[in-house]
Structures are given as C-alpha cells and as structure tokens.
Image (cartoon, rainbow, N blue to C red; front, side, top):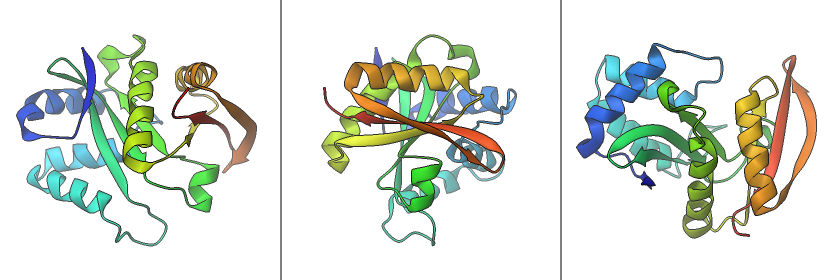
Length: 179
C-alpha cells in the first residue's frame, strides 16, 4: 500500500538502497534534497536528520523557504521522496514551485509520481492550509510533465504558459489540493 511517512531511522536501510540506485543512475532532474541525502550517506548520515530539521525551520538563509521532506513508501519499501516548500518566493514561482519529487529508477513508470502527488496534495492542504500548489519541471522531463498535468486535470487547476529560464524551457501547473 502506497503511503507517505516522515523520514525515520526504522526505514533507513531501504532508503539507503534507494539513494544508491539514484546515485548510480543520475539525471539532470535529480532533486537537491536527494543530492543532499546522498552526500550525507557518503559522509555522515547522522547529519541528514539535522539537515531535515533545519530545512523545516522558519529560520532559513536568504532565498530559501522552510520545506518538509516526506518519503513515499510502498509497504515498507522506499520508492521516492517528495520535498514540499511551505510557501513560494518570486524565484520559486518561476522555477521550482511548491513540490519537488524523485522516484527511484527501478520504480519509475508505474504511476508513483501521480499517486504520490495526490497524497502530497492532501498533506499540503491539511498541514500547510494550501488550497493550490505550483509544480514545475523542465520541458524535456516529459514523464514529470505527464504526471503533473494528469493530476491537474483530475484535481482541477490550470497550466501556465511555458517560460524560458537560463536557456531552458520550464513548464508549470497550479493544482487544487482538493477536488
């Protein structure tokens, strides 16, 4: 059964296996939160828990916002990660949005992004009181684009015009957190 959890040591081994798989199959779309976790895995994994606590703090460096990391689990297996920004800066409104996500390579193409997004939308509504959230992706990331627009069509919302940022085309959608 698919569900979201806050990162916890009980599932550290399956999380490490997922991170190893991601590290061995890097893409240009890897999340900063995943890259940070891999860095901690290679050096001092205890620091990962501190990193997560600091990420949720209201006291963020300039240009950053508080964020919550949730693990997507299929039963007891880690299959992906969602990084949820609590609010948007002008920069995040153009690129980044509220939610970033990454599914481990062996589990891609099975609908986890779409199904996980629906769970994350519920979390955003109940924990952050957000009625709509912004999701963004590079236009070349067609799998992510299909997942975001599929959830947008189901939940309601709208697609914004594609914009160019740093010579890259960025797609984005606003999605309602409740039908």
